[in-house]
Amino acid sequence: MRMRPTLSWTPAEDLPPGTTDLEPVAGALRTGGVLVLSGAGISTESGIPDYRGEGGSLSRHTPMTYQDFTAGAQARRRYWARSHLGWRTFGRARPNAGHRAVAAFARDGLLSGVITQNVDGLHQAAGSEGVVELHGSLARVVCLSCGAVSPRHELARRLEEANPGFDPVAAAINPDGDADLTDDQVADFRVLPCTICGGILKPDVVFFGETVPPPRVEHCRTLVREAASLLVLGSSLTVMSGLRFVRQAAQAGKPVLIVNRDPTRGDPHALARVSLPLGTALTTVADRLGVPVDDEVTAHPRQ
Image 1 (tube, rainbow, N blue to C red):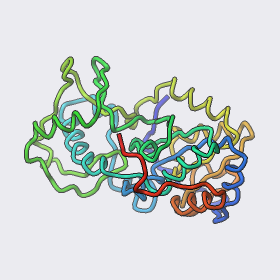
Image 2: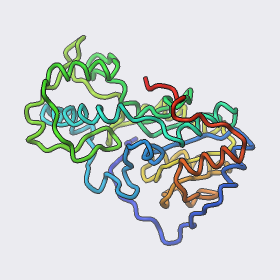
Image 3: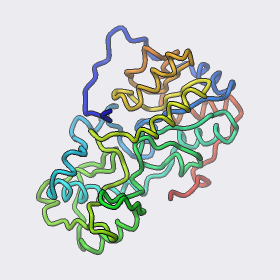
Image 4: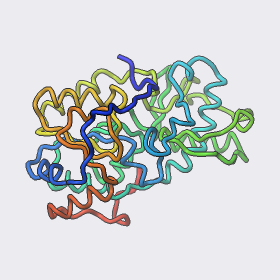
């Protein structure tokens, strides 16, 4: 099972049109048992760009693949230099109204769970509990030799000490926390090994071309089976990583609702696709249901 190939997808002309009617979403939440599946689009209002939406980074950025990362030291130097710089910005991102609304729905007992394709930790920072991180988290680092897992902030501190004065100007920050830098800007960056065994360190995320751990996939399939409906938030569903759960829900006769500005690969399986900004859409639904949403200053701090 391959995860997240960098493929392109062109919407079919006969896809059902988007709507601005939020009642199907509100109705599903009133019933309860809603499983949320979120993608990069829910984090754009926190300053983290999307891959495929308007101005999406795939038009100028090819994410690191597992095969490239493990193939040689030069690729790892390029990755860690760019990722280290990106983490400075990425790590400062805060939950937006969409993340806070999801947490509010969960507190009110309307959700059966949350699966996110994002690696930014913003759902948890907003107060959501038990979030399944389908693609892992940038907040953790794993050793490919001994398997030790450590906090990202510890490696960030070590990298700062090993690379004094490293402060290039990046062209952009991408959804995977990778900054756009030139080869010249990363040429002298020093990469550090695992402190336990000296092995290769990798962020605890599923790279493009890498396999999602089967137990994690099966856990998500169980959540779909147990849910009353599936609510997709901010995902183009271009790759099978998330689309498979939409197909599973639809085949089981469960309502699928999508909130995404642009058409998605899951639209043929959806009861409706709401074409509205996520923060606006979800806070409007929360108001309609009488669900209080935390404001920004009371959101939980990031781990």
